[in-house]
Length: 115
Image (cartoon, rainbow, N blue to C red; front, side, top):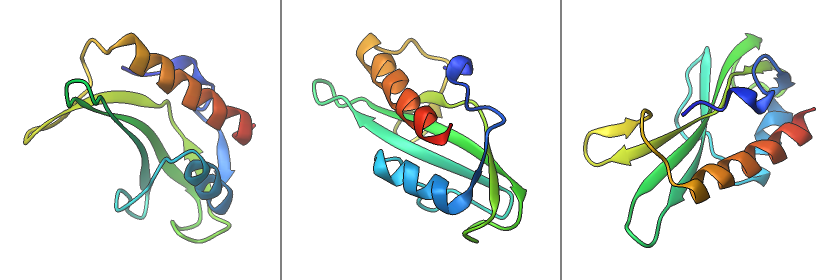
């Protein structure tokens, strides 16, 4: 599920500021980056049935290099996926309303800080 209405696509943010914003909301980069791309993840775990979901924020480098504080990072549309062990994450699913609502709330908080 892609959140195209987020308003994040095309936004360019300084790397150090983006890191700060994402960390404030529990969204982590971990090892999901290379010299041109970054993916920030927010992990949801449904305690009633053990399902695991990931809200992902894809980014590309617009200028500079990853992990340099003044690099410019361009965001894409966030998307939601469900993890299936051991196969990976699937994105073409029907997601529970409470998960989708929480994603929208998180996206709105991030968007407000970036703009």
